[in-house]
Image 1 (tube, rainbow, N blue to C red):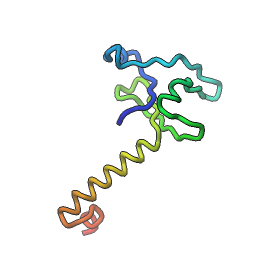
Image 2: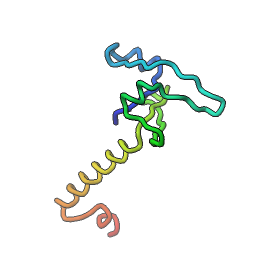
Image 3: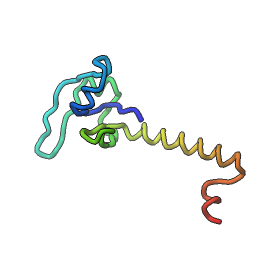
Image 4: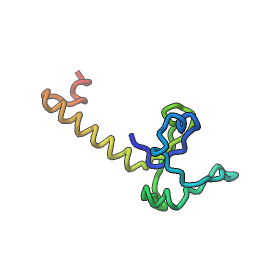
Length: 100
């Protein structure tokens, strides 16, 4: 899964190539835990008012990533189509396999 806007840890940054890092600025966490995503990051990743973002831990567990929910939805739909094709070739569906 590719993160469309990441807040990464120093450990992640150390392991990355300098050309892999795009810095959009700094943000300050407000009293209610809110941040403002810098405008260039919003433009780059087409983040618009009302978009749903998932907040997930980074792979190393030392930061967070923001991922557009629609990206995850498309990934799940693609996986479901792949599974349907796989089970269709076997002459069964995942539901019929587990109901026996």
